[in-house]
Structures are given as structure tokens and as C-alpha cells.
Length: 105
Image 1: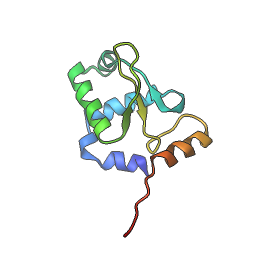
Image 2: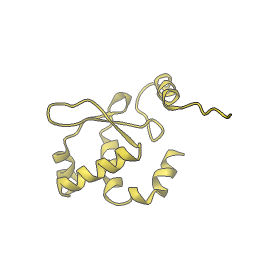
Image 3: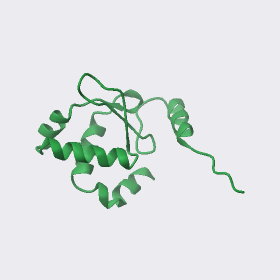
Image 4: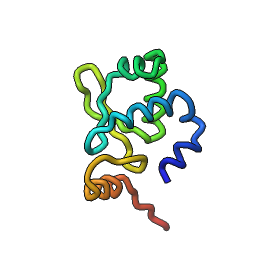
């Protein structure tokens, strides 16, 4: 379960988890998220460099993917294994797209 993995990952405790929870509250259709870092910092009452560091961790862990830029702000896409907002058909396609085939020799 994706949420169990998030809860068990100590790298995601504290600020990264707070940033993730905030972003999940702003989740748009098909898992896109576009919220300026300054807005996240203000809402969570933390400094913007801490938001930036948390986002880097979330991207490195594969929880978020970088999306297209919106002006000066980056957008993100939540990995569908951690949550989904959209049609079930599109969820299945998104998950299938992320699976890789492992060949045994």
C-alpha cells in the first residue's frame, strides 16, 4: 500500500510529509499539482528553502514527478501509486505506464 510505504519512510517524516499532505489537498484532475512554493511556505508557516528541500526529497523518492513550468513556478504530478484524482480507466493506464518488465536470464 502506498500510504503504508509513505508512513514507514523516515526520510518523509516532518516537513516533507507536511508539504506532501498540503499538496495532496490541492490535487487537480489526473494528479497535477500547481502551487507556488511561496504559497506552500505561507500556508505551512515554514521558510521557502525548507519547502524547496522537501520537494526535492519527494521528487527523488518518486512520490512526485516534475511537471511543466507555469510561469516561474514548477508544477508536479503525484505518483498514482500514492493517490489518484481522475477516472479509474486513466488510473490503470498511468499505473501500467510506470511498470517495467524485468527479464530473467
